[in-house]
Length: 142
Picture 1 (cartoon, rainbow, N blue to C red):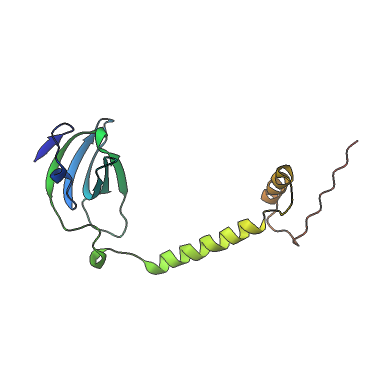
Picture 2 (cartoon, rainbow, N blue to C red):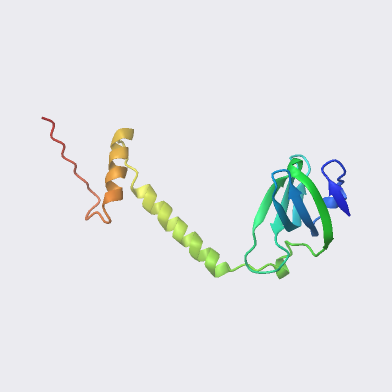
């Protein structure tokens, strides 16, 4: 099955279809259909046809598809039983992000002006570690 932007039907973008796509911008790639959103005309593709723990996801507006060809049908790409998810890695990333967010929140001053916060942020970038939670800045104007 081959198609162009004017001769597509919704069945062409069924979940699990393997497609070879050429865009109006000159990109060429192969991918598997994850989902198709009709109201926004956005096609979500999992790039590459080989299985593995890491995959690229591409969101493509169907208006930019110049031509495509059907390479075959595969199983649902979002099947939980066959989807590789490293939960320990995800939990470690979540904990790191939470600690970073807490540290960022501690650096935001209460009752300070935007200008004072900007000065503190600039100073904070120059110091690896502040000895206490109180920072005194003395400016002498002559």
